[in-house]
Image 1 (cartoon, rainbow, N blue to C red):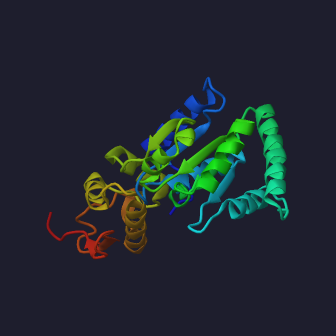
Image 2 (tube, helix red, strand yellow):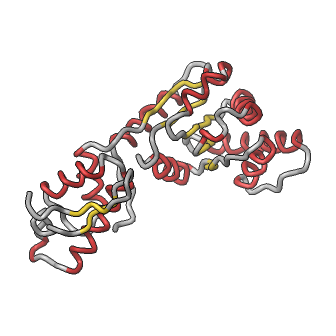
Length: 256
């Protein structure tokens, strides 16, 4: 499978929302929520964006408290965390401020991304600490959830009032799947097989990539002349992916 980042409709929606955040009138309204079920490409999208823009990416832990969170934040900033929380916070303020200034000169957006933020979306210490950082520096903070974060944040009106954009990742459309297949697969795929991938994957990126890998394995073993695309008839009876709910193997049917 090709190592390539494919811009799907979810990715485009994220970029549009980010543009709105960057044009915000109220500087403190610098929080953003990206939500959606697991397997829709949120982590891939945010990891790609943070690496491209030299932003900070953290994955929340279930047992995070504010001090542990600040330790990981400082470590991502290539700094050794001090012992006292007050000193951690002051060090983070200074380092993040420098990163914001550098990004401004380079005409880029500096942001802090907290993935799997559902784990801290009910944690007063963590959420208020991130709000304080955002208020002090007007730094963009992106909370990436797994379907519950928006509901959980309702308990923190001071935080919710600073969220300027909510982005929900949805299942992939047929056009998205065609873009993923064309961008990632080293084997050409016919429309009927792509339609079957769309139906059986239910539009989840993880299953789509699993299907692409299966098609590639079969295609490399059964080369076709002149780069002809592989059809359902070609792959009849072959394993395609696992059903995410039951774990049962999904195979291309013998008769369509």
